[in-house]
Image: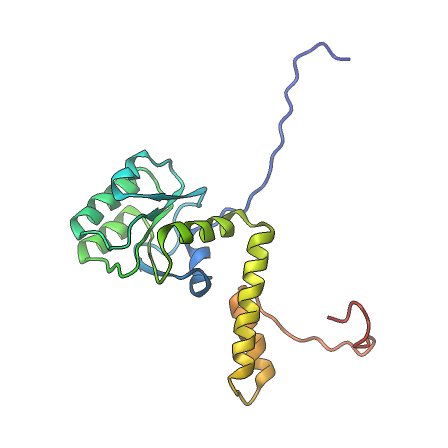
Length: 194
């Protein structure tokens, strides 16, 4: 047994996503880009917050702005200055938000991506985005279900090349290229044929 002081450290590598990664899944997440850069600082956490609470958020936070109404433009201008100073990963505004010209300039100058929800309320959107940045089984299942939904809709769409339409829809939903690969040595009854 060692009598010396020792310290153990474990390094866990976690994917560092930005708003650009979220925007690659914009349809599934229900967000759209409104102003500022497409990708900002890595998202370290997601928090639902009122505009007045932004100064208390740590750097790297993606702030989902609470409320069902789009905030007044002068409040957004102040919030963007605070978000830039705090090095927040970005802001997600409520449904119906349209950036004023000053907000667009401040977001770009301050390097703060501004997204807007297309349908979800702030708490629901925050949970969904948190699942994306933390990964895991819940995110994988949600993404797979969305891909199946899109592939099913493509199959029902009546395209002349249904297989290509299904593969394109599934790939778009998953964010990767999906393709068929014929293997003459594999029978369709083999357990690993799919």
